[in-house]
Image (cartoon, rainbow, N blue to C red; front, side, top):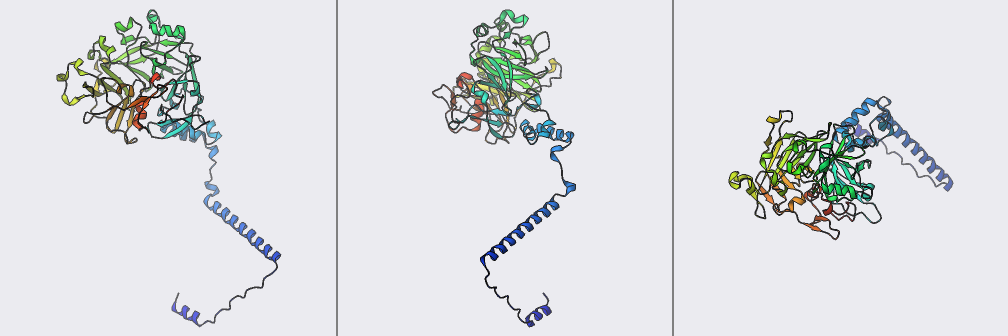
Length: 499
């Protein structure tokens, strides 16, 4: 304000103040208030409409439900590359998007839609009264966690998982099925007692397996580990039978029976005579199924005619005399990663393999039981090389990762995503931690240190679970990678313990 303007205002006479109006009747006052309120509402609506016109110009408006099919496919493909759960959420937004994208519930075994990053934890808190139990799903890549209701687990036993799909067993019918925990869809397979031996092995079916098939009564302890082979259409489910059976069987949806895998190049005379197959670890990797023997030989499952068989890609038989495999003196676990196939080989007591003087002392450690062991991480050489040139390459460090190894599953976890896990470390499954010769839980590669085993206890239902509560992430995972059915309860769904 200028000085001249200020002087002018001071000289001007004071303005008269408005006089209060005398009160009018109550009816007139109510009408006036109602009229003013109506005008205010109209003005407010007009301002909102003008704001909408400014923010949403007709030229910028999009009909999201009717996006071009190519654009919907592009968005869906990018989300699917992140995780199948994101793809499912995208399809749930509106009907037109579902019509323009493939339905995972229809293509149940399509490799693109398998929840391979998701694990259904075997330790689950009991549900509130009168509510169905919610299973805890953990994304092993992103640490996302969701709770889902899986009605099929009320009538089936959960044995293991293959690419995130749960392998279920129906005690009433002996049928095997696969359950997708994200969509709740089930894919059926033949009853397990329908097993056809190959022509070359028909005379040597394991007696224990023959008795189970004949009596249609199966000890669920034999089921431990599964995988997929995507070279067939539909994909083939690979199921591991352990203990006294020692066999691998395969089947596709719609098959009339399961088929025994022939040892092929994994043949050992002492096992062939009993109709058994020597193996320790199974891994689905890049559409094929790989098998490792205890000493570290690696085979690929070949399903082409005339019969399913194992074809050798890495020979390590010289590492262990064949007549000592049953003693479990060396164990080899296959671990998949995005770029390579790794092997964790555990020499339980090196006195059977040349003694301590045959190794670098820095590579050895002594367990609580006084046994001297050795753990090594190896990477499988390029499979495209000639067989004579392939080898197992030593890996000096896992970097910011930790490996969990067990008979049921093997995992490679990012310690950046899960900072509570030890970096550059190997965790043993809970069964292996209980071995008399092991008695440790974690081995750190950098300093060759071991940690005491986790403490487990049996509850009144003879289920084995960690003693300490609440459970840490590593306790959840050591139970996940080693799921022995008889130690995990009759079924995963019965009287679940608190974590």
